Amino acid sequence: MAEVLNPERPEKLSLVVFSGDFDKVHYALVMASAAAAIDTPVTLFFTMEGARSLLRPGVDNVPAWAIQPTSNGLETGADMNDAFKERGVADFETLLQACRDLGVRFLVCEMGLKALDIPRGELRPDITIEVGGVVTFLNDAHKDGSIVFI
Image 1 (tube, rainbow, N blue to C red):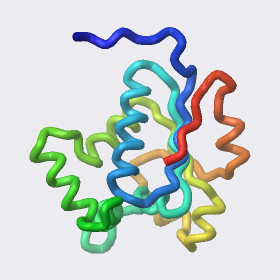
Image 2 (cartoon, rainbow, N blue to C red):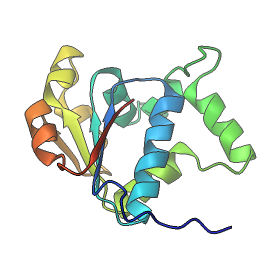
Image 3 (spheres, one colour):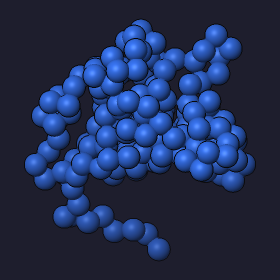
C-alpha cells in the first residue's frame, strides 16, 4: 500500500544529533533522507558526541562513525553497519550521501567542537558542513516545523 503524504506534516525538519551512538546517528540520517525525499527541508545539527560521526577518516582510512559505539554497547558502528548491509538496510555512507545529494543542511555546533577540542579541519571534506551555534540552528528552524532531539 502506498503511503499518502499528509498536507499537515511539518514544513521543515530540524534534527539535533547529540548522541554519538552509531545506531542513533544512523537513524537521524534515515529520518533526514526520508524527509528530504518528500521535499521537506531538513537541517541536521550535530553537537557533542554526535559531531564525531562527521570526522574525516583516520590514518587507517576507517570512518569515524565505524568506531563509535552502539546504544547497546555490545558492538561498534562498523559491526552494526555490516549487519545492516547484509539485511538490505541502507548503510551509513549511503544515507550520508543521500542526505548530501538531497540538499540536507549539515550544521555542526561550534560550542560542541570546542568542548571536545575538535578542530574544524578534522571534519569530512566531502560534505558541506557549516559551523554555527544554537542561535544559528534556532534561526534556521521553521515556526511550522518540527525539532527532534536524538
